Amino acid sequence: MEKYNKLLSNIKKLIENRLFTSKDLKTEVEGMLKFKKKILLNKLSLVPREEFELQKNEIVKLRKDLNNFKTKKKKSKR
Image (cartoon, rainbow, N blue to C red; front, side):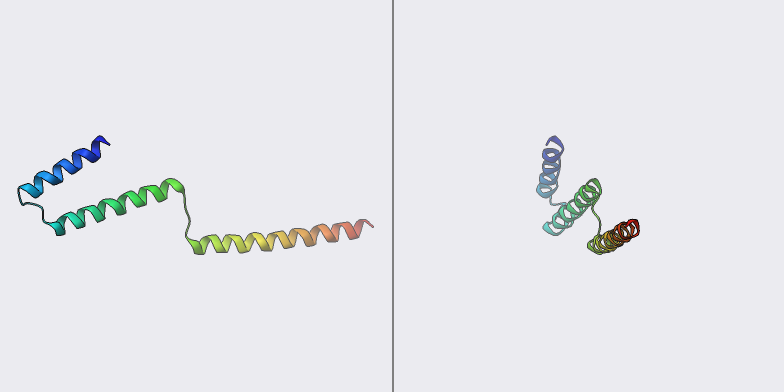
């Protein structure tokens, strides 16, 4: 929280001294938010949707293969 307040204080000073325009502020805030988003996503270990779907389909296929194998094994024991 302290860093956040310090950042706001610095932005306020720059605006007061007319060294920081609203466009600069927008660019700075967008950059900070993108950076924070990347950090959060890395912490969560998220994967792209496409990769998730590929893995999901592979698991479904492996489960079918396993069930077929179990069925064949049961039939061969009889």
